[in-house]
Length: 153
Image (cartoon, rainbow, N blue to C red; front, side):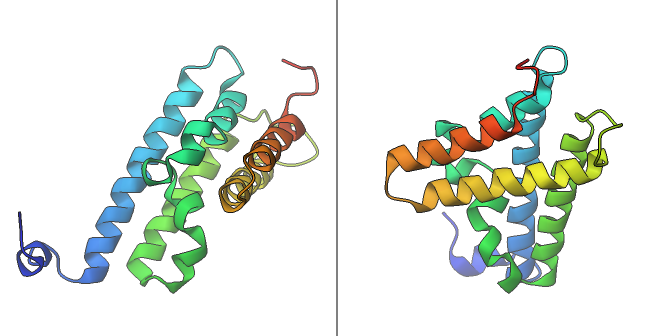
């Protein structure tokens, strides 16, 4: 019910409004990703997170999901305040995933987390870009299969 002027009066600038909106989206996305991890039994948190991230629901709900996969390709054009929020979001995702990865492999947990986050975001971007639902599903299934635990559990 506000006019544009009345709405913008609550923010120092357009960039401040965008940064606030991005921060809200960051908090909401991290909330549901943490829930996916926490709801999983034992050491299945990372697998559940990836399943939720690459799900039909997230694919079709870009406005309610991860802003990085929805808007990441436009982020370099944003004001520094907005990019700072995106950077924080990405780092928090990396940290969340890294906490799910046991140390001791060939790569550090942080490196493994960065690869997984990059794959998840990239897969979702591609799956949303194509106009072939079967290909969209195959892209997401291939990523899940690739990162599935070697022991099948």
